[in-house]
Amino acid sequence: MRRSGVLVVWFLLAFGAAAAEPPKSAELERLNSLIEELTALKSQAAAIESRIDTLTRALVEQRGALQARPAAYDALKASAAAESPADAKPPVVRCAALTTEGKRCTRAATEGSKYCKQHQLARQK
Image (cartoon, rainbow, N blue to C red; front, side):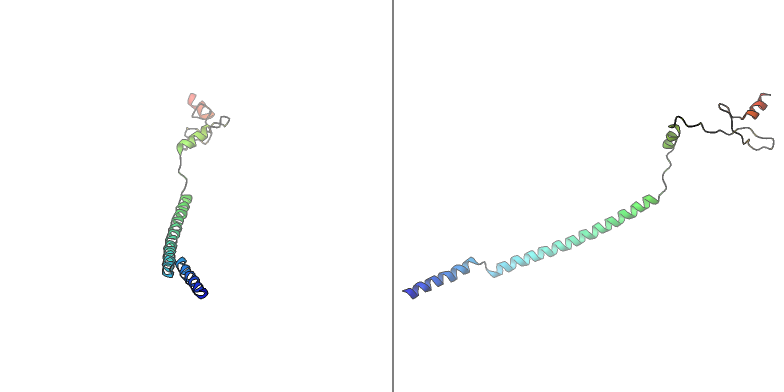
């Protein structure tokens, strides 16, 4: 009886342990599918990294082209900047008269006139 009890216990333990373990083929299938999924993810990550590098290179080239381009002239900003300083001297206007040699006078015109003092006097006579 004792032998048969030991055999029964051994039989239960052997088959109970085998039933508790998942079949090895199912475990291998699960591992293989995980490996395939990780390989696919790795190739997708490599493709994304390549795309990021391409976009970064294009943006760097575009930034360089923008930095090399001369600044656009904005007449409105320039005139507003010229008018903004209230204490600045008015611009010097050159005399509009012509000399006897036919060249333009090099003196500055008086304020409120387009001629220098000498040519104003000459025009008055």
